Amino acid sequence: MPIALVLEEKNKLALREIDLPDDVGPGDVRIAVDTVGVCGSDVHYYTHGKIGPFVVNAPMVLGHEAAGIVTELGEGVSHLAVGDRVCMEPGIPNMASKATKLGVYNVDPDVRFWATPPVHGCLTPSVVHPAAFTYKLPENVTFAEGAMVEPFAIGMQAATRARIKPGDVALVTGAGPIGIMVALAALAGGCSKVYISDLVDEKLGVAANYGNIHPINVTKDDAAEVVRAGTSGWGADVVFECAGAAKSVQTALEAVAPAGCVVWVGMPVDPVPLDIVLAQSKEIRMETVFRYANMYDRAIELLASGKVDLKPLISATFAFSDSVKAFDRAVEARPTDVKIQINMQDA
Image (tube, rainbow, N blue to C red; front, side, top):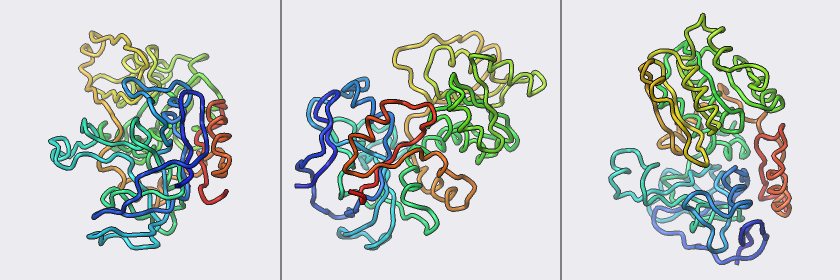
């Protein structure tokens, strides 16, 4: 049996053998996993044992941000070859569902997503995955960058939903990993300038290392006022709310320009109030984001072009044998940490 990082129950991780699906069926590929990123959802399952209705009721392998090498092809696979360097989209929809047929497979109720109970994740040396959701990496994109495509795809989804026009000014509330990814996607999508707000200077400092990303510490300045001052009083053409906090939800509505767009990316733990009258008075457009659909190809092309550089966001890399330490580091939530990764080939 393979070794994997297993969440036994809340607050209990083990690196141990576990029986996992191993048959390479038609349309599948086997992949030797090289790099896996530690996502906030993985950490939340570790520390809380659940996210909303998804509850860890049995041991579950963690991990869903991954890249590796194809080692075996299933019948009918022609767009990949053994030895290809790839990254894998972790959500597998029901190909017969209405959502999939409409091209919005991310909201398919039947989607099976790595490391979402009861589906096992990819923190194990080898996985079997549908070839249709396995993407070849260009030679100049590393495995570490390939494992970052998954969170960057969320940023791509948000930027696409915003319908950015060249020269738009944006505000991102929340400078966590997803907030920074959204900011980079917004710039790549045509924004001339992106403001980003947070409570922590260290997080804002990481984002500010990129050109045309302007930090706002909301313990010192009002984000909406800063944005208005920088736009001759008009406001942000697009606001991406990535913090999922009640105060930042209100900030998004205050900062957005008349007839602008707010994209809701962050997920509040509990319901939050929404100032509908303020939204109506500006006649703003609202969009929501849940994961992504048809974004991997575009994200990989942006990385290969050099227009987006995610390498500075990799804060630390741990060996597979130190996976528990990697998760404990992520639980610390150090203010300068953005993405922790695990190298599966480094035992």
